[in-house]
Image 1 (cartoon, rainbow, N blue to C red):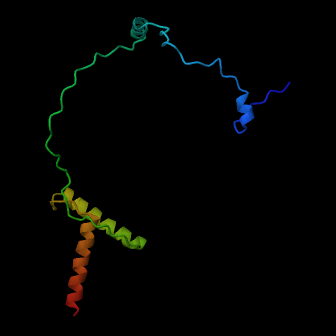
Image 2 (image 1 turned 135 degrees about the vertical axis):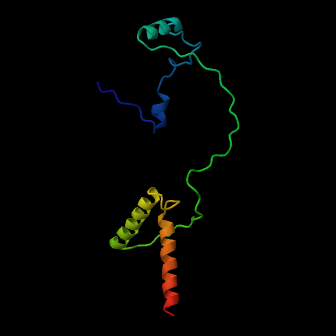
Length: 130
């Protein structure tokens, strides 16, 4: 004898299902193991309970200051450049980083600052050629 599942898509099949044995639980079930037994077994197993610490109300904190000074550079410049130009930019950044670590510079040079310096040099060159 083959038993098939009733289809949820046909009303007549759903009417034939007997759900009379299903009822909500009348009371919560008792735990099978007492809390004291659980504590004892966990202590024996090396799982020691930590006593809760009372919560301390948070003190209002002063606003955090960023370790990195703000440069004012907030606009993104997205441009396609050659690998050689990319490598040249980053080689200059690395040289400037070494100068910063040696104490010759007072701040770390960023790529944005380097682009601004390159633009200034280009503008000077263009004015000199007029």
